[in-house]
Amino acid sequence: MKVLPVGDDALLVEVSSGEEAQALHAELLRRRAEGALRVGEIVPAARTVLLDGLPDPRRTAAELTAADIPPVPPRAPETVEIPVRYDGPDLADVAAHWGVPVAEVARIHAGTEFQVAFCGFAPGFGYLTGLPSRYHVPRRSTPRTAVPAGAVALAGPYTGVYPRPSPGGWQLIGTTDAPLWDPARTPAALLSPGTRVRFVPVGAASDRNESATAGAAAGTAGAA
Image 1 (cartoon, rainbow, N blue to C red):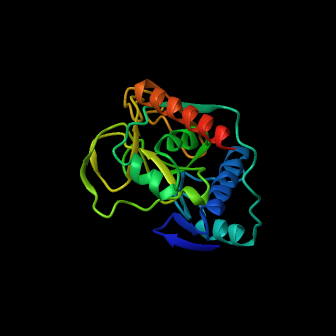
Image 2: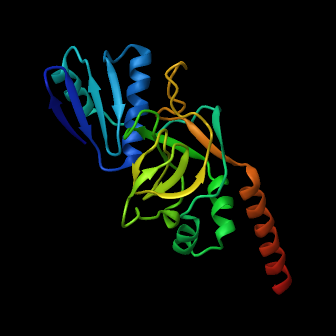
Image 3: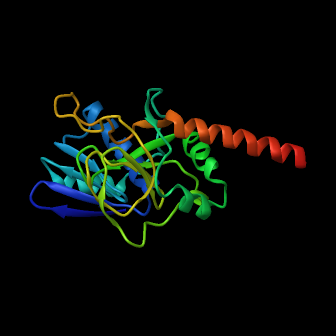
């Protein structure tokens, strides 16, 4: 762990992995809730956590350096379900990278429980972890100049949903109508760090995928 000063009243804590960042974030939230940590904001990222609005940054830095950070505690039972049509233009490329039929991409992705590791890039955009390392995929070699709002995408270890139209280089596997960011809602963001997420297949594309998966399974059973 490396603790760096940021301005007069903030600290940036660097750790070695996303899992450590999630554990540190959870521990800091616990301390703040119990009154053991006075801080304005706690902002997690891929391998860092920013603490802003500290009354005594030096003291907090010393406490963090000396402390053992426990593993991420058991997650709350609430899960956000996001309906998705698995109709993305990069489905075939993702399937080829995974070494599975195209229909299997939807089954594997929808069968995974995700967790929001951190948020960024655009308001409402969450970086979701959960896919095993064998299903990590590279970004596109040529980013798109325009990705539509609601696009469900993969890049590296992360799944994300574009909350608004923007350029992007992630692999697009589906589409959702769920509003990821709504200023009229409290909170405006559907997803926040620590939120559990499941993607629920809907629509004709998903029905075709389910039929194709069932057919493939039947063929495999017959061959065996």
